[in-house]
Each structure stands twice: as C-alpha cells, then as structure tokens.
Length: 257
Image (tube, rainbow, N blue to C red):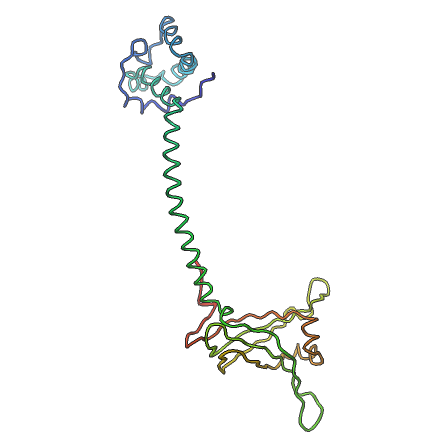
C-alpha cells in the first residue's frame, strides 16, 4: 500500500501540541534512527519506511540551520508519526464527514424553505405591481369615419375590448405594436410603429373603446377588415399604468432585488 503524501514540514508547529512517550520514536527528529530502530518500526507498520525516507529528505534540506534546529529540536518522531497515523484512520474521518453531512442536510432544508418563501413573496409582488395582470385587452375592430358632407375618409380608429380583472379600471395607459405576420427578410413591415392609448373613463367589467390610428398605420390599415387585421398581423399590447380602486399600478415603480 502506497502511503499518502503528507506535508510533514507544514505540520511541525501543530505537533508540539501532542504529548509523546514511545520507545524507538521518542527521540529528536534531528537524530537519525538506527538500523535496528527502523527494523523494529517497520515490523509494526510497513508504511513507516516511506515516512522515514521522506523525512530524511526534509531533514537534509529544511532542518540544516541552527535556528530551525533550535526551534524543532525537541520535536520527536513519535509526535509526527502519531499525526500521520491519525490522518490515515478512515473511520475517524468517515464519522466527521457523516456528522458534517448530517448538519449540512439539516441546514439545507431550512435554507430551501427560506428560498421558497422568498420566491413566493417576490412572485406575488411582481404580480401585484404588473399592470398587465389587472386588465385584459384584445383587438376588436377597425372603424372608419367619414366627413358628413362627403365620402372623404376622416379617420381610421382601432378598437380594443377592455376587461377589468381585479376591480374597477379607473384609468389606463397602454401601447400596442402591430407587426406583419409575414416579414420581408428579418424585419416586419411596421416593426417600430407603436400606438399609444389613454383611457380616463372607468371600466367596471368589459367595454370596447376606440382610438385613432397613428398616421403611419392609417394608410396600411384603413381598408382592412377586422378579420384581415387578425389574419395578417400580430398586435402586441403592453399596459404601462393602470389605476384600480384608487391605487396607481405602474411597472416602473417595482424593482426586484
């Protein structure tokens, strides 16, 4: 069995804490062991020879100055060998690992509960301050208005069906983006054309409201039916602010840490 390499020199300060009383090994590390002492220790533990060969190299290279010898001269082979023997005792370290693992698993459950609690809290907060969760807005129709004195087109209006989800919608601000379902290359026809709508009258349950189309969208949609608009375009709606039961809900007011 190959003995595990251990930083013996690094252990020297610790070894002064250990008491010693052992025949052959109860001598200073500055003194080489005799052949008979080596034979005796090898019979007790075959790994001792590997330790001693490594320690001979350390003694020759690291323990050659007067200062180092004065510092570690009282240290015995027994003290060092006791530490090495202890470190090789797998049962001792298995018990330590089991205890550490048990404590970790116990603490992990507590951490998991805390993380779940935080996750649920911030999920609820995000929903609370998300204006889109308070109202449902769907495209309804395209309506054209003409001047009364002629057949000239006056305006083209887009209608949305607005449904209150969590109480009366007292005020509302939202935008819509109209994108062609069939793109030219990677860009939709009106990829950057966005309309903005503000509603000041209350919505108690559901109601259809109309807004005039921006000029850039008017030319494209003025002759489209509601069916054609839904067939040819995606309408992406985003609510930026809503007032519910006297409280303003604004996405810009919420930030998650």
